[in-house]
Length: 355
Ligand code: HEC
Image (tube, rainbow, N blue to C red; front, side, top):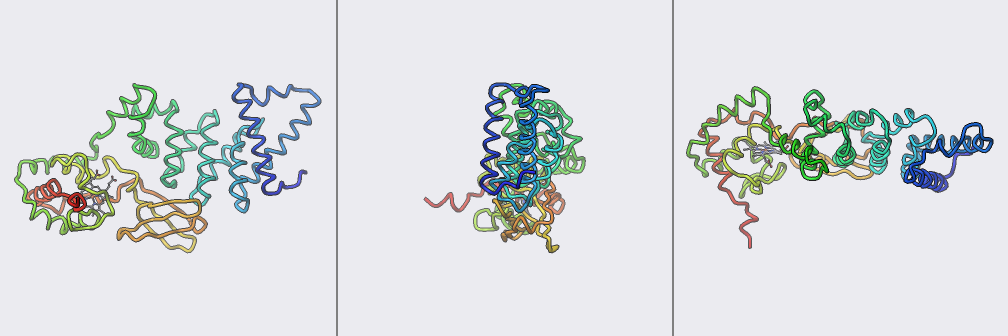
């Protein structure tokens, strides 16, 4: 048995192995090809390789090891002569909010690099537990893979993680995807109205509002009464938890009405609600405001930040839904809604006025 390599030495060993694998990959040569069966030297080389890879598995899985060593180990996993399935499972097991961020990101890249069936599933399976930075990494890996073509064609509806990832990525796909066909389909999917019957009914009910003359002054009062001001700031009322409504590109009454009623049509990933449960059983819900190497920060409904060390996390989960409550319109009469829309459409942000 080889002694456990010490920190630093482990990283150097895995880095060197990684460079060899990269060179082979660039030349289009598989590791197995460099080792003809039955060759005497091959036997020794295989044993050496097996030791490097089993050290890498141990280091990657060891929460006490240095993050830099674990990241270096992750970069070679799945690229050895055998045990690829085991390595993919190990990589997937590192994709949890408790892992240091760098390790999670390295695991996403490592899984994405492996030319194996089923890696899309592996990357998507933990979607609701990932923070925004891991989401971005997963999406950028998946964006360039064939299965997305199929996903865009419609099976996203039956697969919530896929449809969440797609929502997240849609803007990116429609701007950046190399295939014009994929870009076009993504563009069409954007802004598709919600299919939920109760939302459709509410939209139908409130469409006549567009014909009613609204009063901005009454709307301003309504903005507070209908609780909008709890999360949005306009003029001198409310606070910024949700998006700044004065900065909406399209503030036409129709667009405002649809956005207020069909809340989960396009969920901006910045405003998805997360719930963190700590190892001591405390629970915090809110937007995932920030995440770094060793902690996540949630902002609760009052905008109060809560910093939770990753090691204290028992669970972190998003519901893929916007924090903006649904069915707020149910409490409003058409006239009140018209006033509200008139207020939002006419208001100017305080900061716009300052020269
Ligand atoms: C609990 C907080 C909360 C309350 C209360 C709330 N909103 Fe929102 N609102 C949000 C969040 C968060 C978003 C971002 C939604 C998203 O993209 O996921 C949002 C989005 C919106 C948008 C779309 C903005 C955009 O950038 O596309 C409009 C319009 C809007 N809200 C209007 C209202 C109105 C009108 C009310 C009152 C009837 C209201 N909101 C009440 C949190 C809230």
